[in-house]
Length: 552
Image (cartoon, rainbow, N blue to C red; front, side, top):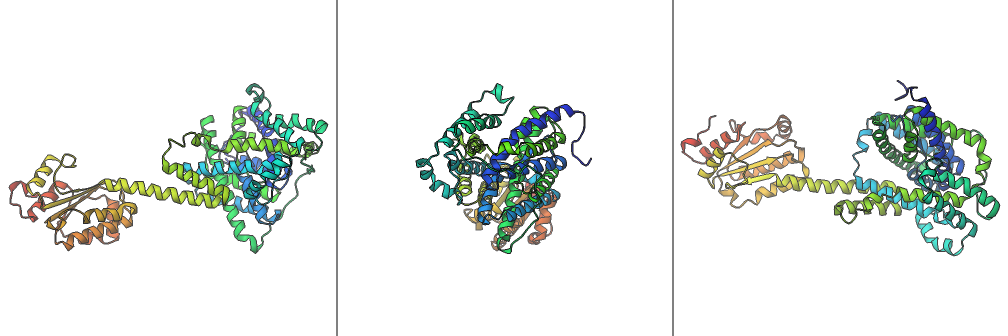
């Protein structure tokens, strides 16, 4: 079927869910549009097109998509860096959609969920902090500074010492409504919408000095033809990749939430393709980029939405709102939108991780803090790149320590030796003559060099006559580890010791043969069983005991 999960057996629930999702989306779309610097209409355009087309072509039937905090923050940053050239930023949104489609077609969707949680926690909390910082000015009746986070932090003193009293009062009322609305009322009218409905008439009648949204087009959005300037091309490509990365993470994490609520299974790659199409069309019509939105999706599902009809209907309801209610939205105070976004920023921060920051593993906390700081102070893509590399290096270090611990260099029998009674007897009869190396589990580049050093530091290594290398329990091996084994075998040969190999799995043999490691082994010195290899090693060491005779 062209539309994933489409059926008409749940039409009533889908209609109600789509309408409820649209009601929640309106204030957020307006707020994100204003915060982006492109205007409130851009937020509505993004919610309309991303919501409609991601629902039709995506892989999560009950998901409701639209502008999100992270995407808005990146959009606003790009607008500043591209000298307020909206056409270039919208082209970047289109390119981000292209990257999302490519990711879906290449099957990358299933890998997005492999990103380490501390990295996700760090950049989500960083984005939440950015949203909060950027709303300080509007909360006090001023425009946000154009220089980004640092400029707005530097401007806090100015905002606080020169407040517009009307705006401060309205922002306070909006915050009280968003935080204190009882659940019984919030279930009928979402708090952000309630804040708009109550604060706007109050502002019109009692607080005329509070800045408002201003003009909003009330017709179908115009076409924005893509444009490229060579000067900004690297920044556009980087921005497109950031949009795609954020869009994929936001959408697929929300898809998991939808799966849990509906007991269904989403299609990750198809979801990326749908989000890509939605973002491309949003960019063509001057809309903000978007992704799967958890709040809207949860509201849609709780209201009965189960198929793409609900998400598509949300987009159509938003379009009707734009065409018929635009003049009313022009009078919404910016301070009220700032109050709504402040709540959004607080909600984006990963309080779940922060609650356990003193008890969580120190490495995870360190990664989270590094990513958070870089997200706020530098940019998101640098933060994610640093976080992923840092997490990968720390993971490799932990794995290499485990792999090294699984390498047993047995020079004398002890209680923890992985040997059978017969093997113990052979080793005891030939104490000081046979060196047994047993590796259990995978071998990778992280532990390779340390394994060589481990062998080099064996006390009295030169005194042993025979060496048995047991790789029968090695489940995986990479090229670096294969070369490390080659180094170990060269050390053994340099000491003129007899070398015996014990069974290897086929993929291990293939890796060793690829580096000609097995050329060190003499004919007849490879065994399937460790006991036979030990008996042959005993004979090579000069043993004449009858029980040391190998069956081979």
